[in-house]
Amino acid sequence: MRVAIAAFMHESNTFATQKTGLQQFHDAQWDYAGDLIPTWKDAHHEIGGMLQGCGEAGLTLVPVMAASATPSGMVTAEAYEHIVQSLLKHLGQARPFDGLLLALHGSMVAEHYPNADGETLRRVREHLGPDIPIVATLDMHANISSAMVTHATALVVYRTYPHVDQRARGIEGAMLMGRILRGEARPCMAHRKLPLLIHIVQQYTGSGPLADVFREVERIANSPGMLAASVAPGYIYADVADMGVSVLTVANGNTALAESQADVLADFVFNMRGDLNAALPDVAEAVRQTKATTGTVCLMDSGDNIGAGSPGDATFILAELLRQGVPQICTVVYDPESAKTCFKAGEGSQVALSVGGRTDRQHGDPVFIQGRVIRLHDGVFEESEARHGGTRRFDQGPTAVIGTDDRHTIIVNSLRVMPTSLQQILSLGIDPKQQRAIIVKGVTAPRAAYDPIADHVIAVDSPGVSQAGPESFVYKNRPKPLFPLEEIRDWRPSAT
Image (tube, rainbow, N blue to C red; front, side):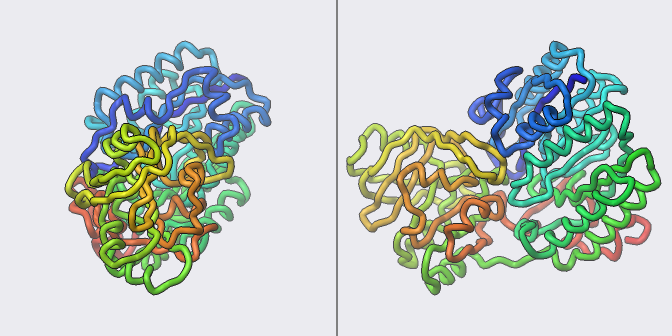
């Protein structure tokens, strides 16, 4: 039994000003055929899980292609068409095979396809025909559409945020594929779209309401007759018709069971809607709270959340920390121009720079610093532990560490990288426990890396294209009504 493995992944923020083109995919990850195995086999990612699961299920691997880019603005039409055509071409060259394991994100938006993942599945299904099973994995932040459900045989969604179970979900998908090909499983899938948005901070699954939700997911997934169950909180930064929470259930040959269990799970989630929102301190208040504490404080910069498509060069929190006189600040700022200046000056040189605030005016103005270039680095580092995103090898491009005259540590890099690995700063010789305040360009995703070293974690309601709550955005394409933007009595359309 030959099983093809492929991936085409991007989380697209429709409010971000920077589009995602072919270069951004080349800068991140783009592998063909046999290159997939050495790149992904040890990664805590669904592709690594698929590779492992196929081996355990006795399936013959047919690696095809994997392309992904760091979250950012919409994917250009040129990039989308080029990658999809390449995917279809390489699927054709890889045949014959009996099934396809496909890693998607679920919230990709292309310039010409608001539901780009649904379009990808449609084209892949058309290319393969109706008989080859397609098991697709999705990020928890997928805005799941009816097209995704229609064209996939089964969908499997991450269950943790930070996403540390990606490899497990890849294994789950491969094992399910093995059962399908052996005739042991006949997936019947049910989908419920809830008129509900969940605040990004409340999507943390380590405790709180989402921990309760995913205990219910586990219960239903492991109940008699079921093959899988999922809840996708969705992605509030993509202004599309399919945005919102989804519930998926997959039963074995029993459509009625899948439908009834979908209703049970949808009721469970919707009845918790009052607990799924949050209010965060603004920048000034978060800095005041930092000053009132002792130890290392990680300030989670919601408005400049790289994992949600923000530019990584916001300066609001840095400027306020400097204004309020907080000592020993550490931050990573995406600023290729400043990194280039530091490399030209050389290690040990004195520099005076205006850092950050270069992408647009939505994320603050450049901040002036002066100090010494204490380290230059190629920006390549590795993460061996299970961390959000499952990536093992990172590349933040030529990177400079500047020790300022007032004893702050400012890191400027040349490629946007999600701050999901503490190795991003450890590899530069920086001890996080020696810092008083660390600005982290994320909210929940970095917690798997930063919680172990933080004495306090403060999620900040900072401005930007990934500001924490949906109330901050003007949506033009979203469905209505959506709780909490509108009051809703029930998730069933006839009862709203």
